[in-house]
Image 1 (cartoon, rainbow, N blue to C red):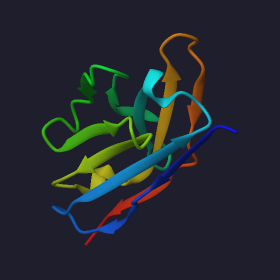
Image 2 (image 1 turned 90 degrees about the vertical axis):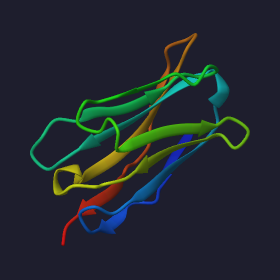
Image 3 (image 1 turned 45 degrees about the vertical axis):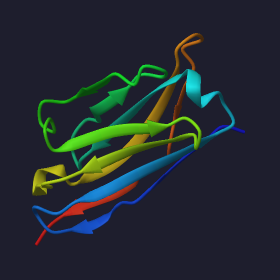
Image 4 (image 1 turned 180 degrees about the horizontal axis):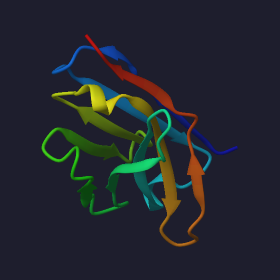
Length: 118
């Protein structure tokens, strides 16, 4: 059974930090490109960051460059999103997604809420 389980969300003040985790099971994590997306109320889901399966090449949305860092631990089947210098506009539900680099199969997690507010 495929599972992607996000954790680490919560309420944080502007300028603060959070570290999201996404634990994967039921598929070949090391062969999957991993993504973090977010969706704010009333807005479309947007891509935040991605990391390739083996080489670990990363990409970021312009809005988070220099503040967020995506990383992965293939031994633990986990992808992370370190979020620093958080802003109110970062408030959203954050989702992780996997995409198998060979088959193209995609899976989504259930999401974790991040709220940035004073």
